[in-house]
Image 1 (tube, helix red, strand yellow):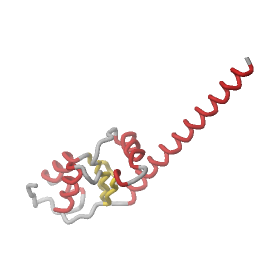
Image 2 (image 1 turned 30 degrees about the horizontal axis):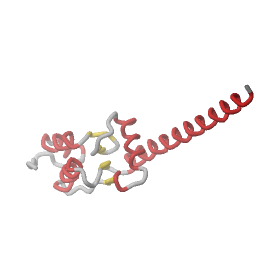
Image 3 (image 1 turned 60 degrees about the vertical axis):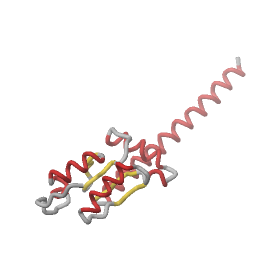
Image 4 (image 1 turned 90 degrees about the vertical axis):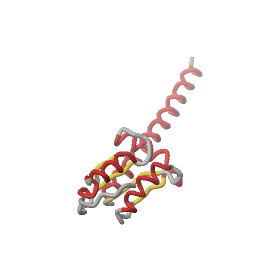
Length: 133
């Protein structure tokens, strides 16, 4: 009976340690996302090879605006950041675009906001100029 109790206690300690460690990592990733979004006027969480990410980045290039881009596939903690994005905005997909600390959405949302003039307004630009991509 003592062997089973010792093994059970050891197993419980291991599970608790792993759980606490994972929660701390998730919390630090959420903090990273929130800090990054609040520190830059335009933030794009992206993957360098993703055509939808390239399309979203292209919108800002066309507007002569330089976003702060986090390429998740080029970071060791990219998957954890992507999990944090899921927790924050309810989506794990990329790109995820933030303007002035507010979540705009993904590629389609960014393109739609650009075409409607809403993106220019968010960026404090003259929304009268519309361009097809």
